[in-house]
Amino acid sequence: NAGVTQTPKFRILKIGQSMTLQCTQDMNHNYMYWYRQDPGMGLKLIYYSVGAGITDKGEVPNGYNVSRSTTEDFPLRLELAAPSQTSVYFCASSYLGTPDRGEGELFFGEGSRLTVL
Amino acid sequence: QKEVEQNSGPLSVPEGAIASLNCTYSDRGSQSFFWYRQYSGKSPELIMSIYSNGDKEDGRFTAQLNKASQYVSLLIRDSQPSDSATYLCAVNMKSNYQLIWGAGTKLIIKP
Image (cartoon, rainbow over all chains, first blue to last red; front, side):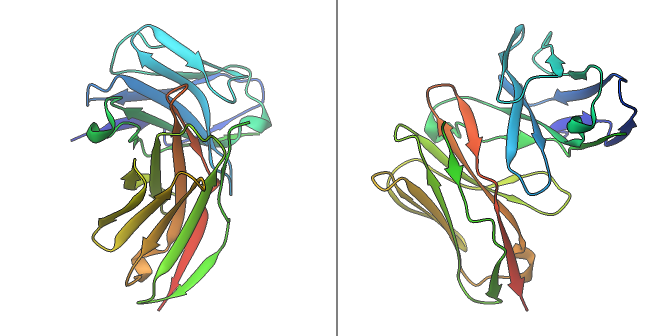
């Protein structure tokens, strides 16, 4: 039961570098999300996807890009890393159905701690 | 601006007592409400979900929803040290299928 798998778990970047955070889920969920969590703060939505080929911006999309070529994979690309992108990143997935089928319940990956110096 | 508000805490509760966590939300049209628990350095995990007014019980946990007053609460009975964590309230605002998250309440259970 893998669930949602994120890699890498830790990464240090220099300012201006780029990288991709990988996320894959094996639950056949329609919805996938990327969040960031800063210390003492709630989760902020970066991007989300309602299915393969469809992505949309969340609250804080600037400096990031995503793609969803398959149901399983939802990578997050950081271009030109900045210190403000230092955070913990969580990938999550959900099955969006009717309330009695757990609409809105998110399954999270273990998180990726990114530091930009 | 659609918001979810929580007291950041920390909330300190003696072992064996009842812990009460509260959350208010701004969007009156919200449909689904969730409590997630997050241990330090870990990812959030779902504790309770509630969709209609009233109480919903699951073991030591009870979620309470009052849509008229726009608040949702979580009660933890017989609190254990293992309940020490940050509790995140999340609200599904139907208009865009996204969850809006509170900043979380840090709960400390003292032995």
